[in-house]
Each structure stands twice: as structure tokens, then as C-alpha cells.
Length: 87
Length: 186
Image 1 (cartoon, helix red, strand yellow):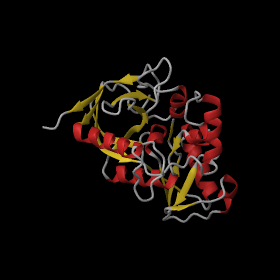
Image 2 (cartoon, rainbow over the protein chains, first blue to last red; image 1 turned 60 degrees about the vertical axis):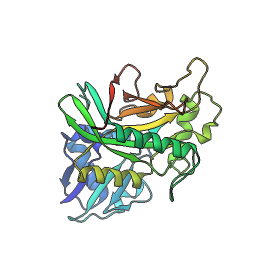
Image 3 (cartoon, rainbow over the protein chains, first blue to last red; image 1 turned 120 degrees about the horizontal axis):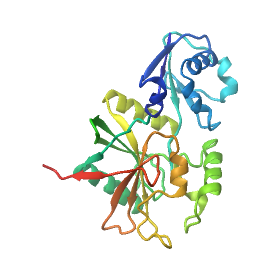
Image 4 (cartoon, helix red, strand yellow; image 1 turned 45 degrees about the horizontal axis):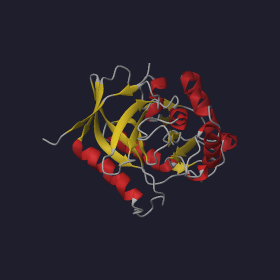
């Protein structure tokens, strides 16, 4: 199963879990599974374009349209990052 | 429930406060580190441990890169500025800070390795405004940007550069202030 790293500010939506293990052949599948399991994480889609995804530390380019084309292996580590902003 | 509900106070060791002030003053003086955004503003992250009803700051993590002018973040920030920023002497295009996603990921990883929680971000207010001489509270823009962040906004008033001070507001909301106590070195 792939491991999804939940950034600290969003752990209130995952019962304070840092890592979630999920199966899925593509990034799209894995994220769908994540959001079905933890519906509070839908907030990652509140600001389209802000979500960055890294697979094994490598940035996934191209946005959500490309997620179905990103193959995910069992050993992969997926990080979800929403930048923090201030005035 | 928020991550930091029921927090009575935030404890900041004096040497950590000095590190924050040094960061602010260095940036204001136009002294930049390699790889650092060359802007006279400081932005950083405070992390630490929660003990009962207290937050203890253990780490000051100055953020190097401002991704303010990198798309698609630029479009987002431009919109936020246009809709919520109060006009100031600094042009809107030069205001605001948004973290570089990779730098933020590395920061999160470091905090996870050290078993620290991210408490929030700090930034400084430099210019006095009419009717607000010290600028020690979040602006409307600060509040909007911190909405639903589950983090504190630490506002540093450095209008008087010799006497900076900091206040902590949960999610940048004025009436959600938590007392901040600077602990002198023992």
C-alpha cells in the first residue's frame, strides 16, 4: 500500500494520523480513496491550484488533470502540501 | 474542534524570540542568505510541543523562499490582495508571502522527525497606519489568509525597530488571541 503523509494542519481531519496507507494504481485512485475515508480532507480542494503533491519527494506536475496518469507503487510515499500564506 | 483548543498560553524561550527578532532585523537591513527571497520581509514557522494547556515553542524556522510570484500561487495571492488588502505605501504586488511547497514539505518533515507540532507562522508589520500606530494585530488580509488554517498567526510589531514585540492570534482572528510569554534564559 502507498503511504500518504498528511500535513500537520490537516490532521484534525484524519483523527490526528500522520500517515494513511491506501491501495490504488494511480494517484487519482489513491486520492479518491483518501477523500472517501476522510471526507474532511475535501478542504484540500477549496482553493484550486494551491495543492502540491510530491511522490517520493518529486513534484507531480500538471495539476489534477494528470493524476490519473501518475502510476503509484506500493512503496510510494505521497505528500500533500497546501502552502501557508500571510500578509 | 481545533488542534489548539483550550490553550491558555504560549511559552517562547528568550533565545527563540531573539532568533525571530534577528531574522526580522536582518531582512529589514537588506541582508539576505543564499537562496533566500530578496525581500525586506520576514516569514517563518514556530513549532514545538503541547503540554496540557500550554504550547512550548522549541523551533524557529525562518522561511527562505516567498513563492508570491510563482504561478499558480501568484494568481491566488493577487486575487487575495485585490479583494482584502488595505492600501499601503507598499504596492500590492510586493505584499504577501506564500510558502514554497517544497520548502514547506521539508519543514513539515523536520518537525515530524523531531516530534514537533507546527503552531503557526510569524511575520512582521513595519509601517504604521493611520489609526493604527503599532500594527500589532492581524489585518483583514491576515485573517482571510489564515482562515481554516488550524494555525496561529504570530504578528510582530516592528514599527519601532528598537522595541519589537509579538502577539499570537489563532487563525489570525483578533478575538482569538492567546497570551504569549517570553521565558527568560535560566
